[in-house]
Length: 209
Image (tube, rainbow, N blue to C red; front, side, top):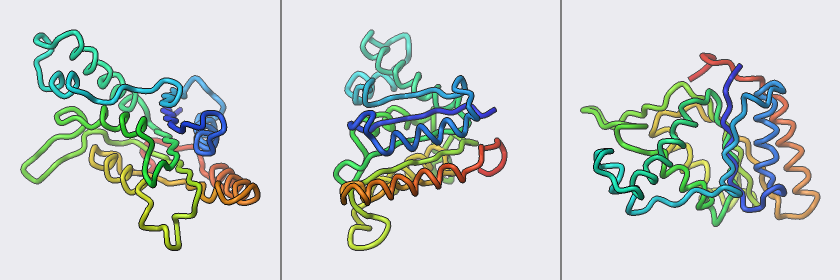
């Protein structure tokens, strides 16, 4: 049975389309066993943005860190531990001003650490977080998969790049688009996403990387 990390981030809370679809996907991947799902709710339990204590503390020997620096680095360590412990990572991302929410960005900033989740080599950077399956569930009020707004979508562009940078390259995107274009459009987008999720078989480790 795969261990699943579900990361939700929408400021819309329970009304969020991305969170609803991501939760459905996580439950299906768990095969009904909710014990295999660990939830990181960035809306109701926001993570502090990285600050001076984190930036200095991560480059300071543990014995020399101040209490504030120690707490900042330990927060990052915990978030990284959650990712490393998971086989499947389901990320719910609501588009905010063409990109990810600030709380999801903060989560990413705590994950990307030189010498921990990536390292520099003679041939360039190498991601150290490998053998993970990532599902990115993204929601947007407009249509960005085609048409004049394609170049404005920085959600999956950013997340694919930064997660790939630390080694997570097996990323599948489920889009829920046009939720602000009226009730019918929103319901249709949601229904299409549900159908897409129900067609995805449970992930098996080693199936693809």
